[in-house]
Amino acid sequence: MRRHELGRKRSGMPQFWFDVSRDDSEWSEDDEGTELPSPEDAGREAMSLAYALALGNPPARYIAIRVRNHRPEPLLTIRISAEVLKRA
Image 1 (cartoon, rainbow, N blue to C red):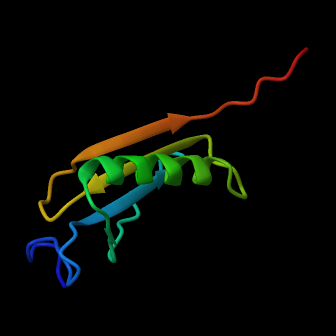
Image 2 (tube, rainbow, N blue to C red; image 1 turned 90 degrees about the vertical axis):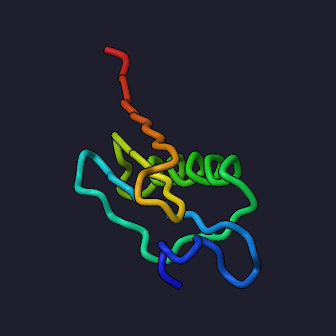
């Protein structure tokens, strides 16, 4: 199903897409999407994804997750940054 076709799959739950940018790279657009009950759940999912990517191998210093529904403009964008400071 295409994103512009109501944003719902057979289950009736809304579909959300999670685009990712790591360390200021171009957006990697999600072309599959995920069914979730609500925009609030999509926000929580985006936070979990950002955290997992920040801890990944290799770790990212800057992560942005753009959450979209069936409309072209993002519902929300989450940005996190991480920096390791070592004691002198």
